[in-house]
Length: 205
Image 1 (tube, one colour):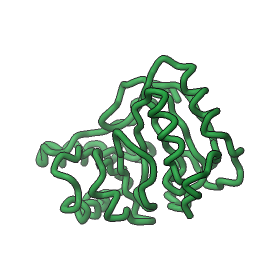
Image 2 (cartoon, one colour):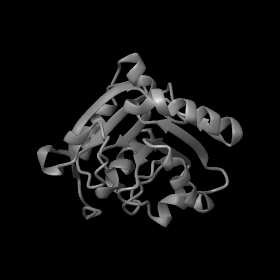
Image 3 (cartoon, rainbow, N blue to C red):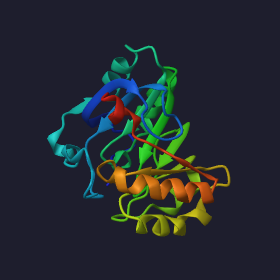
Image 4 (cartoon, rainbow, N blue to C red):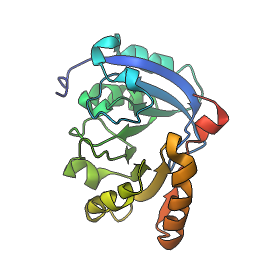
């Protein structure tokens, strides 16, 4: 499933410069690279166009990095889709050589590749995260679509690093109902923080 470690091209859905809208790095300017391909199948996914990797052109790693360098931030966020469906060693090596901090947003359903300064693991019921990603995660961000998700996610907590940052995020279409529930939970469990999709409130990418 992962591409060859020597792969120099990856299916690119889109890339863009914006502020990180979610989680630990909220508010930081970043260059986003959204790769095509995902088989996790979240019913509430807001980028379902990313699911089919063959629907997106394969772009060279060098071109991706050159485009990233046109912007002043040196934070690159690799997302999807599910980016770990592809081998990301070459992409992250080039980004780091160019001076970028490398962040990834992943469901953890595929083995780790690439070299990361920050791994944001957002587990999904539809395809569970691998143990190796759980232990490597710097950030554990649970998107809550139903109140049962709070109970479900607790099975993973013993496998996380003690330093892993914990976030609960209401799914956008359910935010009105779910956010009060998360506020109550976080007040009772202060190790957790609230993540909001601030880019959607701001109407930016």
